[in-house]
Length: 182
Image 1: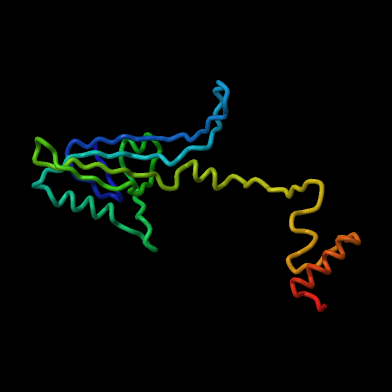
Image 2: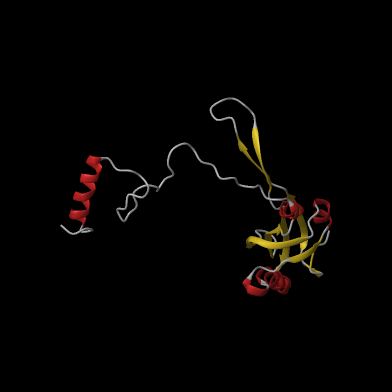
């Protein structure tokens, strides 16, 4: 099994790739025993890669780190074209490094155990979602006056008619607040 990123082979021994598709959903049962779920979409697919690099092949680890730390224009992570049988079976064409790269020394071998995750970039569900027309939002209103209508912060009454008592209170409020003259 091989793994190529933009045509460059990821070197190492005992290469294992695990592909994952996360399907997001929410429980709709509330306090009941209902089993209904709300489908919230497909999240980007991931490839978890594990391999071993012998200490004597230190340059292979350096090459992998160079790939992981590469950035494109604007400081964004570099997107790679991926060539791998597992990735092809899952329909993954482009990936970025995600969640870091870990290297730990093996207990018995003179080698590093490497693990990293590649996340799909520009996935098919993402393309479909981009082509789908957006939901139109319609303005909704209920009975009564809109919030904020009526007396404003400047003390003007707007279009509402004040009762006699309210007019007296308004005069007193304006006097105390310094809006009008005594």
